[in-house]
Length: 250
Image 1 (cartoon, rainbow, N blue to C red):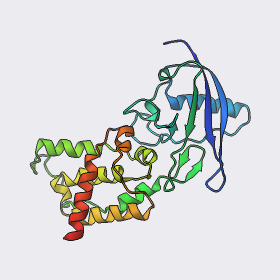
Image 2 (image 1 turned 90 degrees about the horizontal axis):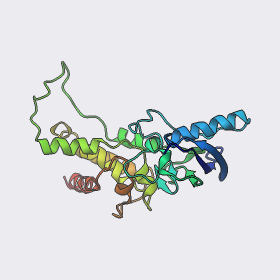
Image 3 (image 1 turned 120 degrees about the vertical axis):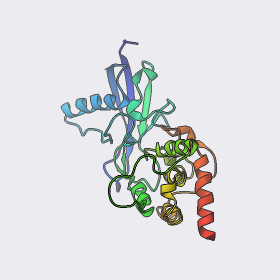
């Protein structure tokens, strides 16, 4: 496991949204197998900078699998070949010496490429904004047990709230649907009494905004759940659809 790896990276390079891009091949020698994939890109960028070349642009923040920033496809799979793992948590011992690794940004019209591996995922932010706020009473913080919540409902809400908004679901969907992301954000509130007052306007606002942003429709292939690094369930899509139809009728 301690032996160094010699790898070949084929990385998508694109100057900006208005220009076409292409894959560029980079050999990377003596790779520590305990590095994360982002650390591998750091090493490659140090090499490129020393050689006077433009470093590869990619997003990152926490590097702990929480923020959802490290949005990229690795060998055609969102976040790489390891299930329930973000790119920043993917370690190089999952690859073999001599491997060629292809790295590219999310491919979706609603996520335009800004530069190299960086895409504009602000459409997710606008969908969240369309959902509005959860109303709460002003004053001191309420007691944690003031509103009884069944354990199964609390777990359901927590599991949905685990979504980090990385966009892997959109990238892996043949229709570039954002239904898994939107449904997770809706389901976390629909399971709790605090989310009930704005439930109707929330689902109408978010689903309509999702369509307005140009995301495709869900056709139930399940690719989104299979590639989600947080294992968000497609059952949430059913919850979203039921809430939306009910809001239209009411």
